Image (cartoon, rainbow, N blue to C red; front, side):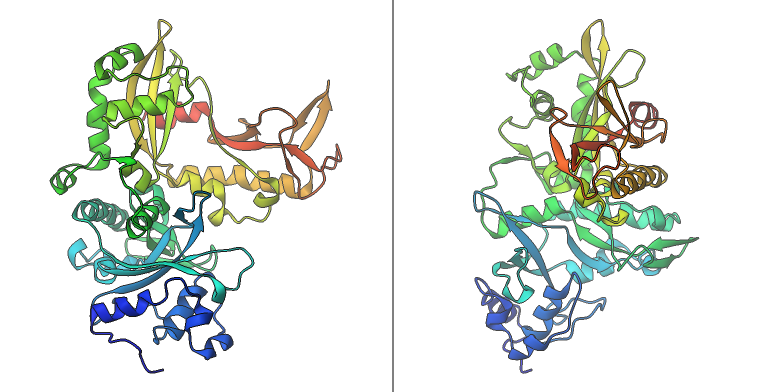
Amino acid sequence: MKLQYNPSDKNSVIDYAKKLKGKSLRQVCDLKILEHSYSGKGNFGQVLEKFYFGYEPNSIAEADFAQIGMELKSSPLKQLKNSEYRSKERLVLNIINYINVVEQNFENSDFIKKNASILLIFYLHLPDFDILDYLIKLVDEWSFSSTDLEIIKKDWETITKKIADGKAHELSEGDTFYLGACTKGANALSVRKQPFSKIPAKQRAYSFKQGYVNHIIASIANHPTEIYGKLITSVKIAKKQTIEEIVIDKFKPYYGKTIEEILAITDVKINTTAKSFYANLTKAILGIELDKEVEEFEKAEIIVKTVRLKENNLPKEDISFPTFKYEEIVKEEWDESNFKDVLEHKFLFVFFQFENDKLVLRKVKFWNMPYSDILEAEKVWAKTKEIVKKGKIVKEVFGGTRYTNFPNKSFNSVSHVRPHALNASDTYNLPTKDKLTKAKEYTKHCFWLNNTYVRDEIYLK
Protein backbone atom coordinates (compact mmCIF):
# COMPACT_ATOMS: atom_id res chain seq x y z
CA MET A 1 0.00 0.00 0.00
CA LYS A 2 1.44 3.35 -1.09
CA LEU A 3 1.35 5.83 1.79
CA GLN A 4 -0.83 8.91 1.28
CA TYR A 5 1.22 10.96 3.74
CA ASN A 6 4.84 11.65 4.66
CA PRO A 7 5.70 9.68 7.86
CA SER A 8 8.68 11.96 8.55
CA ASP A 9 6.55 15.14 8.50
CA LYS A 10 4.35 15.67 11.58
CA ASN A 11 2.00 18.09 9.80
CA SER A 12 1.53 15.64 6.93
CA VAL A 13 0.59 12.83 9.35
CA ILE A 14 -1.84 15.03 11.30
CA ASP A 15 -3.46 16.48 8.15
CA TYR A 16 -3.94 12.97 6.76
CA ALA A 17 -5.45 11.82 10.07
CA LYS A 18 -7.89 14.75 10.15
CA LYS A 19 -9.40 13.57 6.86
CA LEU A 20 -10.99 10.82 8.99
CA LYS A 21 -13.19 13.25 10.92
CA GLY A 22 -16.88 12.67 10.26
CA LYS A 23 -16.21 9.46 8.33
CA SER A 24 -16.14 5.72 9.00
CA LEU A 25 -13.38 3.23 8.24
CA ARG A 26 -15.54 1.71 5.50
CA GLN A 27 -15.64 5.07 3.73
CA VAL A 28 -11.92 5.83 3.81
CA CYS A 29 -10.01 2.55 3.74
CA ASP A 30 -8.76 0.27 1.02
CA LEU A 31 -11.39 -2.22 -0.16
CA LYS A 32 -9.25 -5.03 1.24
CA ILE A 33 -10.55 -3.92 4.63
CA LEU A 34 -13.64 -6.01 3.96
CA GLU A 35 -11.46 -9.09 4.15
CA HIS A 36 -9.82 -8.16 7.45
CA SER A 37 -9.57 -10.85 10.10
CA TYR A 38 -8.73 -8.73 13.12
CA SER A 39 -10.76 -9.56 16.16
CA GLY A 40 -10.83 -8.68 19.82
CA LYS A 41 -11.13 -5.49 21.80
CA GLY A 42 -8.49 -3.57 19.86
CA ASN A 43 -9.69 -4.46 16.36
CA PHE A 44 -10.75 -0.91 15.40
CA GLY A 45 -7.23 0.33 16.05
CA GLN A 46 -5.66 -2.58 14.18
CA VAL A 47 -7.81 -1.97 11.10
CA LEU A 48 -7.05 1.76 11.29
CA GLU A 49 -3.30 1.12 11.39
CA LYS A 50 -3.16 -1.42 8.56
CA PHE A 51 -5.80 -0.17 6.13
CA TYR A 52 -5.65 3.59 6.58
CA PHE A 53 -2.16 4.43 7.79
CA GLY A 54 -0.60 1.50 5.96
CA TYR A 55 1.59 -0.18 8.56
CA GLU A 56 1.32 -3.51 10.33
CA PRO A 57 -0.12 -3.41 13.89
CA ASN A 58 2.71 -3.99 16.35
CA SER A 59 3.78 -3.79 19.98
CA ILE A 60 7.24 -2.28 19.50
CA ALA A 61 8.72 -0.07 22.22
CA GLU A 62 9.09 3.03 20.04
CA ALA A 63 6.25 5.27 18.84
CA ASP A 64 4.17 4.18 15.81
CA PHE A 65 5.43 7.09 13.71
CA ALA A 66 9.01 6.70 14.93
CA GLN A 67 10.53 9.34 12.65
CA ILE A 68 8.47 12.10 14.31
CA GLY A 69 8.09 10.46 17.75
CA MET A 70 4.31 10.24 17.59
CA GLU A 71 2.11 7.39 18.84
CA LEU A 72 -1.28 6.55 17.28
CA LYS A 73 -4.17 5.75 19.61
CA SER A 74 -7.87 5.26 18.92
CA SER A 75 -10.55 5.16 21.60
CA PRO A 76 -14.36 4.90 21.79
CA LEU A 77 -16.70 7.72 22.80
CA LYS A 78 -20.21 7.82 24.17
CA GLN A 79 -22.49 10.80 23.61
CA LEU A 80 -24.45 12.45 26.43
CA LYS A 81 -27.97 13.86 26.13
CA ASN A 82 -26.50 17.36 25.87
CA SER A 83 -24.52 16.14 22.82
CA GLU A 84 -21.15 16.34 24.61
CA TYR A 85 -18.74 13.44 24.26
CA ARG A 86 -17.29 11.37 27.07
CA SER A 87 -14.79 8.55 27.09
CA LYS A 88 -16.28 5.07 27.06
CA GLU A 89 -13.23 3.62 28.80
CA ARG A 90 -9.67 4.26 29.96
CA LEU A 91 -7.06 4.81 27.26
CA VAL A 92 -4.65 1.85 27.27
CA LEU A 93 -1.04 2.66 26.34
CA ASN A 94 2.06 0.45 26.21
CA ILE A 95 2.62 -2.80 28.11
CA ILE A 96 4.71 -2.41 31.28
CA ASN A 97 7.95 -4.37 30.96
CA TYR A 98 8.58 -5.26 34.61
CA ILE A 99 12.15 -6.33 33.92
CA ASN A 100 13.26 -3.22 32.03
CA VAL A 101 11.34 -0.45 33.79
CA VAL A 102 13.25 -0.72 37.07
CA GLU A 103 16.44 0.23 35.19
CA GLN A 104 14.91 3.39 33.74
CA ASN A 105 14.18 6.89 34.91
CA PHE A 106 11.10 8.75 33.77
CA GLU A 107 12.82 11.00 31.24
CA ASN A 108 14.35 8.08 29.29
CA SER A 109 11.59 5.55 29.98
CA ASP A 110 9.77 3.44 27.40
CA PHE A 111 6.61 5.24 28.51
CA ILE A 112 7.89 8.69 27.53
CA LYS A 113 9.53 7.47 24.32
CA LYS A 114 6.22 6.04 23.21
CA ASN A 115 3.67 8.50 24.60
CA ALA A 116 5.20 11.99 24.75
CA SER A 117 3.20 12.88 21.63
CA ILE A 118 -0.01 11.03 20.77
CA LEU A 119 -2.21 11.26 17.69
CA LEU A 120 -5.67 10.60 19.12
CA ILE A 121 -8.62 9.36 17.08
CA PHE A 122 -11.92 9.15 18.94
CA TYR A 123 -14.88 7.32 17.39
CA LEU A 124 -18.50 7.11 18.49
CA HIS A 125 -19.24 3.61 19.75
CA LEU A 126 -22.77 2.40 19.04
CA PRO A 127 -24.12 -1.01 20.11
CA ASP A 128 -24.60 -3.56 17.32
CA PHE A 129 -22.67 -1.46 14.78
CA ASP A 130 -19.88 -3.05 12.76
CA ILE A 131 -16.53 -1.47 13.66
CA LEU A 132 -16.20 -0.36 10.04
CA ASP A 133 -19.24 1.89 10.48
CA TYR A 134 -18.29 3.73 13.67
CA LEU A 135 -18.13 7.46 12.90
CA ILE A 136 -14.86 9.19 13.79
CA LYS A 137 -15.67 12.37 15.71
CA LEU A 138 -12.43 13.84 17.08
CA VAL A 139 -8.89 13.80 15.68
CA ASP A 140 -5.93 15.73 17.06
CA GLU A 141 -2.43 15.57 18.47
CA TRP A 142 -2.09 15.48 22.26
CA SER A 143 0.89 16.14 24.48
CA PHE A 144 1.02 16.68 28.25
CA SER A 145 0.80 20.07 29.85
CA SER A 146 3.82 20.75 32.08
CA THR A 147 1.63 20.51 35.21
CA ASP A 148 0.04 17.19 34.20
CA LEU A 149 3.45 15.83 33.25
CA GLU A 150 4.70 16.35 36.82
CA ILE A 151 1.72 14.42 38.24
CA ILE A 152 2.13 11.65 35.65
CA LYS A 153 5.85 11.46 36.44
CA LYS A 154 5.03 10.86 40.13
CA ASP A 155 2.48 8.22 39.10
CA TRP A 156 5.09 6.47 36.92
CA GLU A 157 7.56 6.53 39.82
CA THR A 158 4.93 5.05 42.18
CA ILE A 159 4.30 2.17 39.76
CA THR A 160 8.03 1.60 39.21
CA LYS A 161 8.78 1.59 42.95
CA LYS A 162 6.15 -1.07 43.56
CA ILE A 163 7.76 -3.24 40.89
CA ALA A 164 11.22 -2.59 42.37
CA ASP A 165 9.84 -3.66 45.79
CA GLY A 166 8.86 -7.04 44.32
CA LYS A 167 5.15 -6.19 44.37
CA ALA A 168 4.22 -6.06 40.68
CA HIS A 169 1.49 -8.62 41.46
CA GLU A 170 -0.05 -6.10 43.88
CA LEU A 171 -0.29 -3.20 41.43
CA SER A 172 -3.64 -1.42 41.41
CA GLU A 173 -5.05 1.51 39.47
CA GLY A 174 -5.88 3.03 42.84
CA ASP A 175 -2.15 3.45 43.56
CA THR A 176 -1.93 6.50 41.31
CA PHE A 177 -3.76 9.62 40.12
CA TYR A 178 -3.76 10.16 36.32
CA LEU A 179 -1.57 7.33 34.99
CA GLY A 180 -2.82 3.86 35.92
CA ALA A 181 -1.47 0.33 35.61
CA CYS A 182 -4.45 -1.58 34.20
CA THR A 183 -4.62 -5.32 33.59
CA LYS A 184 -3.97 -6.17 29.94
CA GLY A 185 -4.41 -9.66 28.60
CA ALA A 186 -6.79 -12.19 27.18
CA ASN A 187 -7.63 -13.59 30.62
CA ALA A 188 -6.49 -13.92 34.22
CA LEU A 189 -3.75 -16.32 33.07
CA SER A 190 -1.93 -13.54 31.17
CA VAL A 191 1.03 -13.13 33.51
CA ARG A 192 4.65 -12.02 33.35
CA LYS A 193 7.79 -12.56 35.39
CA GLN A 194 8.80 -9.73 37.71
CA PRO A 195 12.42 -9.00 38.66
CA PHE A 196 12.35 -9.04 42.47
CA SER A 197 9.79 -11.70 43.29
CA LYS A 198 9.04 -15.22 42.13
CA ILE A 199 5.30 -14.50 42.20
CA PRO A 200 3.93 -14.17 38.64
CA ALA A 201 2.32 -10.76 38.08
CA LYS A 202 -0.65 -10.08 35.85
CA GLN A 203 0.31 -8.41 32.61
CA ARG A 204 -0.42 -4.69 32.90
CA ALA A 205 -0.23 -1.65 30.68
CA TYR A 206 0.05 2.03 31.41
CA SER A 207 -3.28 3.75 30.92
CA PHE A 208 -4.86 7.17 31.26
CA LYS A 209 -7.77 6.95 33.66
CA GLN A 210 -11.18 7.52 32.15
CA GLY A 211 -11.55 10.86 33.93
CA TYR A 212 -8.25 12.03 32.45
CA VAL A 213 -9.35 10.93 28.98
CA ASN A 214 -12.53 13.01 29.44
CA HIS A 215 -10.27 16.01 30.09
CA ILE A 216 -8.39 15.31 26.84
CA ILE A 217 -11.67 15.00 24.93
CA ALA A 218 -12.94 18.30 26.35
CA SER A 219 -9.71 20.01 25.31
CA ILE A 220 -9.80 18.64 21.76
CA ALA A 221 -13.52 19.42 21.39
CA ASN A 222 -13.03 22.92 22.88
CA HIS A 223 -15.59 22.32 25.60
CA PRO A 224 -15.63 25.03 28.30
CA THR A 225 -13.21 24.42 31.17
CA GLU A 226 -14.57 27.06 33.56
CA ILE A 227 -16.68 24.34 35.20
CA TYR A 228 -13.50 23.26 37.03
CA GLY A 229 -11.57 24.69 39.94
CA LYS A 230 -7.89 23.80 40.28
CA LEU A 231 -5.88 22.72 43.32
CA ILE A 232 -2.63 22.94 41.34
CA THR A 233 -2.36 26.27 39.56
CA SER A 234 1.24 26.06 38.35
CA VAL A 235 3.97 23.58 37.46
CA LYS A 236 5.99 24.97 40.37
CA ILE A 237 3.33 23.71 42.81
CA ALA A 238 3.12 20.36 40.98
CA LYS A 239 6.89 19.86 41.36
CA LYS A 240 6.80 20.75 45.05
CA GLN A 241 3.75 18.81 46.29
CA THR A 242 1.58 15.86 45.35
CA ILE A 243 -2.21 16.14 45.06
CA GLU A 244 -2.41 14.18 48.32
CA GLU A 245 -0.11 16.59 50.18
CA ILE A 246 -1.97 19.65 48.91
CA VAL A 247 -5.37 18.31 49.99
CA ILE A 248 -4.18 17.25 53.45
CA ASP A 249 -2.47 20.62 53.99
CA LYS A 250 -5.74 22.41 53.20
CA PHE A 251 -7.74 20.22 55.61
CA LYS A 252 -5.31 20.16 58.55
CA PRO A 253 -6.12 23.66 59.93
CA TYR A 254 -9.72 22.49 60.39
CA TYR A 255 -8.92 19.30 62.34
CA GLY A 256 -10.74 19.33 65.69
CA LYS A 257 -13.25 21.94 64.57
CA THR A 258 -17.01 21.50 64.39
CA ILE A 259 -18.96 21.88 61.17
CA GLU A 260 -20.33 25.18 62.47
CA GLU A 261 -16.82 26.47 63.15
CA ILE A 262 -15.62 25.40 59.69
CA LEU A 263 -18.54 27.20 58.02
CA ALA A 264 -17.78 30.33 60.04
CA ILE A 265 -14.08 30.29 59.10
CA THR A 266 -14.62 29.56 55.39
CA ASP A 267 -17.50 32.07 55.28
CA VAL A 268 -19.25 29.99 52.61
CA LYS A 269 -23.04 29.76 52.60
CA ILE A 270 -24.05 26.11 52.27
CA ASN A 271 -27.48 24.52 52.65
CA THR A 272 -26.86 22.18 55.60
CA THR A 273 -29.88 20.00 54.73
CA ALA A 274 -28.95 19.45 51.09
CA LYS A 275 -27.77 16.05 49.92
CA SER A 276 -24.67 17.76 48.51
CA PHE A 277 -23.76 19.38 51.85
CA TYR A 278 -20.63 17.35 52.62
CA ALA A 279 -19.42 17.57 49.01
CA ASN A 280 -19.82 21.35 49.15
CA LEU A 281 -18.13 21.54 52.55
CA THR A 282 -15.14 19.69 51.08
CA LYS A 283 -15.03 22.23 48.22
CA ALA A 284 -15.18 25.10 50.71
CA ILE A 285 -12.22 23.72 52.66
CA LEU A 286 -10.27 23.17 49.42
CA GLY A 287 -11.02 26.72 48.27
CA ILE A 288 -13.06 25.58 45.25
CA GLU A 289 -16.21 27.49 44.23
CA LEU A 290 -19.36 25.50 44.99
CA ASP A 291 -20.59 25.55 41.39
CA LYS A 292 -17.36 23.99 40.14
CA GLU A 293 -15.83 20.52 40.26
CA VAL A 294 -12.29 19.84 41.48
CA GLU A 295 -10.34 19.34 38.25
CA GLU A 296 -7.71 17.05 39.77
CA PHE A 297 -10.38 14.86 41.41
CA GLU A 298 -12.25 14.54 38.11
CA LYS A 299 -9.10 13.63 36.17
CA ALA A 300 -8.01 11.09 38.79
CA GLU A 301 -11.54 9.72 39.33
CA ILE A 302 -11.14 10.17 43.08
CA ILE A 303 -14.15 8.92 45.03
CA VAL A 304 -14.86 11.13 48.05
CA LYS A 305 -16.56 9.41 50.99
CA THR A 306 -17.65 11.30 54.11
CA VAL A 307 -17.79 9.10 57.21
CA ARG A 308 -19.45 9.99 60.51
CA LEU A 309 -17.84 8.20 63.43
CA LYS A 310 -19.48 7.37 66.73
CA GLU A 311 -17.55 8.18 69.90
CA ASN A 312 -16.05 4.67 69.92
CA ASN A 313 -14.52 5.33 66.42
CA LEU A 314 -16.97 2.97 64.70
CA PRO A 315 -18.55 4.53 61.60
CA LYS A 316 -22.25 5.14 62.07
CA GLU A 317 -22.93 3.36 58.79
CA ASP A 318 -21.37 0.90 56.37
CA ILE A 319 -20.07 2.33 53.09
CA SER A 320 -22.30 1.60 50.09
CA PHE A 321 -21.39 1.23 46.41
CA PRO A 322 -23.65 1.45 43.34
CA THR A 323 -26.27 -1.27 42.97
CA PHE A 324 -25.37 -4.23 40.76
CA LYS A 325 -27.69 -5.64 38.11
CA TYR A 326 -28.36 -9.34 38.56
CA GLU A 327 -28.40 -9.99 34.81
CA GLU A 328 -24.99 -8.36 34.44
CA ILE A 329 -23.08 -9.80 37.40
CA VAL A 330 -23.62 -13.40 36.18
CA LYS A 331 -21.87 -12.49 32.91
CA GLU A 332 -18.89 -10.79 34.55
CA GLU A 333 -15.43 -12.11 35.25
CA TRP A 334 -13.75 -10.69 38.33
CA ASP A 335 -11.00 -8.75 36.54
CA GLU A 336 -13.58 -6.93 34.40
CA SER A 337 -16.26 -6.62 37.09
CA ASN A 338 -17.83 -3.33 38.16
CA PHE A 339 -17.09 -4.06 41.84
CA LYS A 340 -13.35 -4.59 41.27
CA ASP A 341 -13.26 -1.48 39.10
CA VAL A 342 -14.69 0.63 41.93
CA LEU A 343 -12.36 -0.91 44.52
CA GLU A 344 -9.34 -0.07 42.35
CA HIS A 345 -10.15 3.65 42.47
CA LYS A 346 -8.40 6.07 44.76
CA PHE A 347 -10.62 7.26 47.62
CA LEU A 348 -10.56 10.35 49.77
CA PHE A 349 -12.13 9.64 53.17
CA VAL A 350 -13.26 12.62 55.22
CA PHE A 351 -13.81 11.60 58.84
CA PHE A 352 -16.12 13.50 61.19
CA GLN A 353 -16.81 12.30 64.73
CA PHE A 354 -19.74 12.91 67.06
CA GLU A 355 -18.67 14.87 70.14
CA ASN A 356 -21.38 16.19 72.47
CA ASP A 357 -23.93 15.84 69.66
CA LYS A 358 -21.78 17.90 67.29
CA LEU A 359 -19.72 16.66 64.38
CA VAL A 360 -16.00 17.42 64.60
CA LEU A 361 -13.56 17.00 61.68
CA ARG A 362 -10.97 14.42 62.72
CA LYS A 363 -8.88 13.83 59.59
CA VAL A 364 -8.83 13.12 55.88
CA LYS A 365 -7.09 10.18 54.28
CA PHE A 366 -6.33 9.12 50.72
CA TRP A 367 -6.72 5.36 50.44
CA ASN A 368 -6.93 2.55 47.96
CA MET A 369 -7.71 -1.02 48.87
CA PRO A 370 -4.65 -3.23 49.50
CA TYR A 371 -4.16 -6.26 47.29
CA SER A 372 -4.89 -8.77 50.08
CA ASP A 373 -8.23 -7.09 50.84
CA ILE A 374 -9.20 -7.02 47.16
CA LEU A 375 -8.76 -10.81 47.21
CA GLU A 376 -11.17 -10.94 50.18
CA ALA A 377 -13.69 -8.72 48.38
CA GLU A 378 -13.45 -11.06 45.38
CA LYS A 379 -14.80 -13.90 47.57
CA VAL A 380 -17.91 -11.82 48.35
CA TRP A 381 -18.40 -11.02 44.66
CA ALA A 382 -17.91 -14.67 43.59
CA LYS A 383 -20.38 -15.96 46.20
CA THR A 384 -22.93 -13.35 45.14
CA LYS A 385 -22.55 -14.25 41.47
CA GLU A 386 -22.97 -17.96 42.27
CA ILE A 387 -26.16 -17.34 44.31
CA VAL A 388 -27.76 -15.24 41.56
CA LYS A 389 -26.74 -17.69 38.84
CA LYS A 390 -28.28 -20.65 40.68
CA GLY A 391 -31.47 -18.77 41.55
CA LYS A 392 -30.92 -19.29 45.26
CA ILE A 393 -31.27 -15.73 46.55
CA VAL A 394 -34.01 -16.31 49.12
CA LYS A 395 -33.10 -18.60 52.01
CA GLU A 396 -36.42 -18.35 53.83
CA VAL A 397 -39.49 -16.15 54.24
CA PHE A 398 -40.49 -15.46 57.81
CA GLY A 399 -43.23 -13.08 58.94
CA GLY A 400 -43.44 -11.61 55.45
CA THR A 401 -39.69 -10.84 55.42
CA ARG A 402 -37.39 -12.47 52.90
CA TYR A 403 -33.99 -13.58 54.23
CA THR A 404 -31.27 -14.11 51.61
CA ASN A 405 -28.21 -16.28 51.08
CA PHE A 406 -26.13 -13.26 50.11
CA PRO A 407 -22.82 -12.92 52.02
CA ASN A 408 -23.38 -11.01 55.27
CA LYS A 409 -20.86 -9.45 57.65
CA SER A 410 -20.04 -12.77 59.26
CA PHE A 411 -19.02 -14.17 55.85
CA ASN A 412 -16.21 -11.68 55.29
CA SER A 413 -14.26 -9.06 57.23
CA VAL A 414 -14.11 -6.62 54.31
CA SER A 415 -17.45 -6.53 52.56
CA HIS A 416 -21.03 -7.79 52.49
CA VAL A 417 -24.18 -7.61 50.38
CA ARG A 418 -27.53 -6.18 51.39
CA PRO A 419 -30.41 -4.13 49.91
CA HIS A 420 -29.86 -0.62 48.57
CA ALA A 421 -33.26 0.35 47.21
CA LEU A 422 -36.10 2.84 47.73
CA ASN A 423 -38.35 -0.01 48.89
CA ALA A 424 -38.94 -3.73 48.34
CA SER A 425 -40.57 -3.09 44.96
CA ASP A 426 -37.52 -1.19 43.64
CA THR A 427 -36.13 -4.14 41.71
CA TYR A 428 -33.90 -5.50 38.95
CA ASN A 429 -34.74 -8.49 36.72
CA LEU A 430 -33.24 -11.86 37.59
CA PRO A 431 -31.41 -14.00 35.01
CA THR A 432 -32.69 -17.12 36.77
CA LYS A 433 -36.02 -17.32 38.58
CA ASP A 434 -35.62 -17.55 42.36
CA LYS A 435 -36.16 -21.19 43.30
CA LEU A 436 -37.95 -20.57 46.62
CA THR A 437 -40.21 -17.61 45.77
CA LYS A 438 -40.42 -18.09 41.97
CA ALA A 439 -39.74 -14.37 41.65
CA LYS A 440 -38.45 -13.11 38.28
CA GLU A 441 -37.13 -9.87 39.76
CA TYR A 442 -35.65 -8.92 43.10
CA THR A 443 -35.04 -5.86 45.27
CA LYS A 444 -31.89 -3.94 44.32
CA HIS A 445 -28.78 -4.88 46.28
CA CYS A 446 -25.22 -3.59 46.40
CA PHE A 447 -21.82 -4.36 47.90
CA TRP A 448 -20.94 -2.56 51.15
CA LEU A 449 -17.68 -2.01 53.02
CA ASN A 450 -18.11 -3.19 56.61
CA ASN A 451 -17.99 -0.33 59.12
CA THR A 452 -15.56 -2.35 61.26
CA TYR A 453 -13.24 -2.62 58.23
CA VAL A 454 -13.44 1.14 57.67
CA ARG A 455 -12.55 1.73 61.33
CA ASP A 456 -9.71 -0.78 61.61
CA GLU A 457 -8.12 -0.65 58.16
CA ILE A 458 -8.71 2.95 57.09
CA TYR A 459 -9.41 5.32 59.99
CA LEU A 460 -7.11 3.84 62.66
CA LYS A 461 -4.23 2.92 60.32
